[in-house]
Length: 306
Picture 1: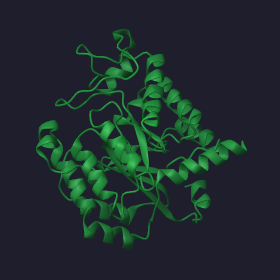
Picture 2: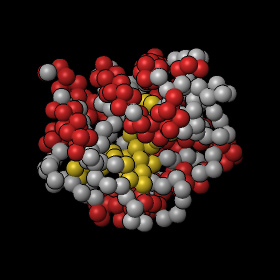
Picture 3: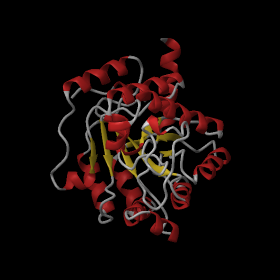
């Protein structure tokens, strides 16, 4: 396995393990923002990304402005509206021909619907609009990533995602392999290695100065059980390199319970990453916790020198 050049830039050795502990879906609900705000004062959470089209985005932006020194917030590029209890729409268009609106005027519910129907030019405009909206709201955007990994559904979407990120001097989430749900890892059904052409493309982007992650893991939304034990097993087996660990923390509120069927898993993430047991796991594991802000600064330096 080749060493990740980011490790050296971070002052780490080739066999060290650096991990970004990341809160997804901030702004989907008040419960998600409240959980993020609380975890930010702990020792573990190191980044997050916001759903810009969602109802609680203005409050998320206000929190980021008021806490700019400690916030590491990206844009969770959103092309789907998958939560049945609270739908949201595109920022850039009201034209059904864009393929970004369903029959009710919301973003499509599935990545497959976006892949099959969305005009790549409309997707490009929507990615741009969401980033510009976050910047205009006063968020010091540290990176972009992708809700439900919809950007990966078509090469044209992915190319826009990378191009627009570079135009703004922010890193897009890039990984060498597949995203792995910890439930799948526990049950022996993790994805295969990345295809050769994907690996080659990642090497090309890396040569331009973009940070590329070695591994990405998600706590499972399908079940709330065993969070601390799952993370313990992950840390025991985590390989050297740069790893992103995605969680979906939210506080247990009537709003959250009404909003989504996976509320228990989101509460489990919040509870586990608030616990002394989780802090002890990471301390004993000897991993280096980093955020996206340091990677963004590396990218900007590389772009200036290039």
